[in-house]
Image 1 (tube, rainbow, N blue to C red):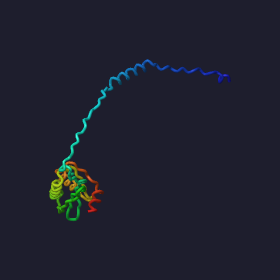
Image 2: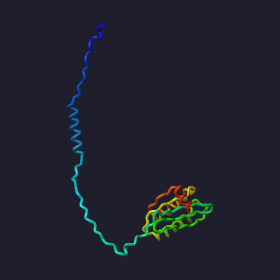
Image 3: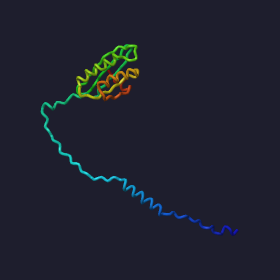
Length: 171
């Protein structure tokens, strides 16, 4: 019975040696200081802009079409290619191309290029265009239209078929 009254021996905790930790921190701090890059604070001075009063001939705004699009729709016997744009003077160009039984339709490629040539004559500074297709257009025709457009304009954005169907149904 007297065993429970006896105090158990005290546990000894080993002390953590601090010298190696301090050595490690010294090396890390030294490494961090050497690895940082110091830069001189500079102040850039920008010259004031030179305001030039425009001549009366220069005040005319250039015609810039907004959102030019090439759209392709398919019917039973033909494809309809539409080039449309909005802006100050909205407009559109379109052509019908007969379907053929071959995988690659050369007429589709040529007619698309002809429409784009007419568009580029009207707006020579325009560099971007959007292309869109009805949801039932074959992949080969998508590539054909893309190749025709890319040969004329390099900055191309692809519209979703939902947007294309909505635009084509409103025409």
